[in-house]
Image 1 (cartoon, rainbow, N blue to C red):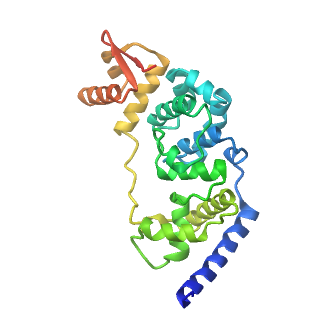
Image 2: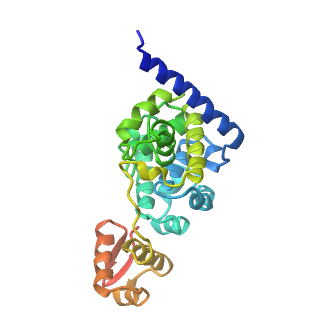
Image 3: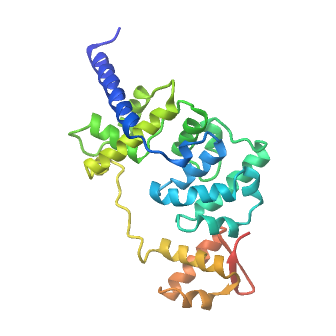
Length: 278
């Protein structure tokens, strides 16, 4: 038998769902990865969207899919080709992870992207949230996950007065409100509602217990890494001296970053010259 609080919560969730869907029906975003249910294309979009704004992904997604339309075409491509198309998205290790994903899917799953969260989580660069998003968007599976816009919605609607809201408090509400008959469109609606709320009430995500302010990109190791990869993509087999000359950074810092890039299999060094890993 339901107690009063349970009934009250159910009514609130019903109203909440109607509000979110009503907004989505009038204001839903048209995004290219929402125009497909091809699991590989959705896998590409979800890895691109990790820590990256939609507007930046929009400028790269279609070109990437056009260049590498299938698992097999991505497996056959060199890292240099992949980097050329990825350039500008940042977090370049995702490009390597994506190629490794394609290789595993081809070799272990007969080029068919797996539809279960547990199998998707085994792929490189894919955590539980990304695996759940792929399952929901590619296969319409009722997987439960949180990303930044979803977090914004639940903080605003269910924790209006609270600070330091933990994801473990939000997850049960995501599960309770999930439209299991159409998880794909429900999550699209939630995300779009979150985008609107962020614009209307700036700083909502600051109320999350998991909020951390991103460090500045300008002058960061991440920026230097990106510049090194960009240079090697244009001009392979560069010397350390040649690379350092093109970077406005401390020599030892550049050497440390080069060593890290080699360790992470981004680049190789042979006969004193650096090039992108193949």
